Amino acid sequence: MALGGNQTCNINALPSFESLGIASDINVGMVSWDNQTVDAMERCCGRNSVNLVHDCVLWCEVPDNLPDSTSFNICLRRTWNESGIFGYHKASAATSVPGPSFAGLGVLVLVVGYLCHAI
Image 1 (cartoon, rainbow, N blue to C red):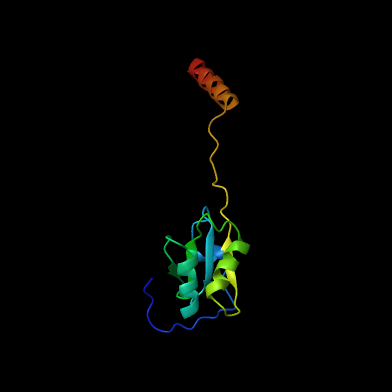
Image 2: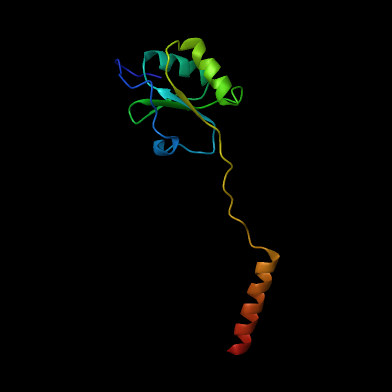
C-alpha cells in the first residue's frame, strides 16, 4: 500500500464501524493510520488489500487464519508496538429475503380465483 507522508491520526480512537461504509458480511480489521500501523496491517491482512477510509482508518478483510479479534490483535502487536486501539468486525449473517411459502401461494390462488368469479 502506497500511503505517502506522515499522517497524524488519533491512534486512541476509531469511528463506529457502521459509519465507515464497509460491507458487514466480511470479517474486518481496522486501526488508525500511522507509519507503524500500515506495516502491521499489511502483514496481518496477508493478500487482502489494506484500504483507507475517512483519511485516518486503515481496514482490510481479515484472512481466515485470524478468525477473531484476539488473533488479529496478536498479529498487529507483533509489528505495531504502540499502545492504541484496533477494531475487529465479525461478519454478520447475510440477510435473506424469504421466498413465498405454500400457505402464501394458497392464499394468492384463492384471491385470484375469487376475483375471477366476481368479474
